[in-house]
Length: 229
Image 1 (cartoon, rainbow, N blue to C red):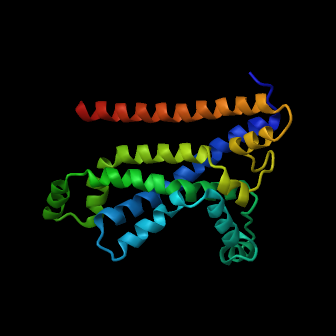
Image 2: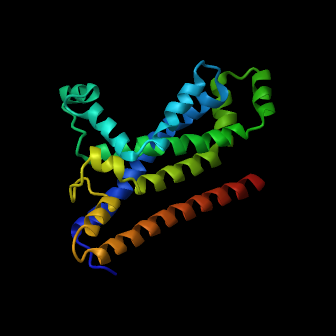
Image 3: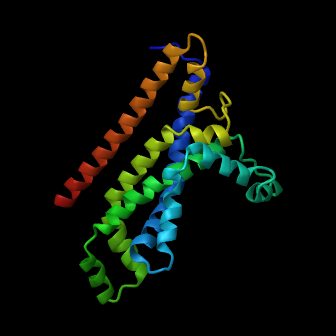
């Protein structure tokens, strides 16, 4: 076991905190966007889909720079936040926002695939019985999308754990404040003799990601057993 410094343990805790916060904050919006893309008839769905998936094809550094422009003191959103006394840039909140933007497409795509697999006859039956759209949403679509929600949340959490490019631009690499595991690994790879600690943090990152995947698999199997009983 490498002799980690206190800032390394802080980086581990911060990585988990950022990934969990980003995932929980994104779930409601991700579900709403997926529902909009699958079941609504609003015009311009192709454009919405393209904007949602844009962070997947953009370099993370570009995403981070755009966030920096928007949230900086001269940015349109940063100016509003400054007026309210809210500081985001170079705080852990900026790391959360970066993870949300980069991981959001994976969340929406997983939920969307789950919604597209729902038997449309069930939805039509609900409407035939006179259920309003929100009743159909919460009693038919949401329960049948649970597995997709879990899968999407898992993907986003794992992606957030490994987020580097956007985070270092918008949150910086401040030990004990905004430094996550990937940023700490980057520091150690550029430090003479830091290879051992970098490898140790890599193993910690692998263990966290594997734990999340196993947790996801356990939830899915438990739900399958509940559905059969």
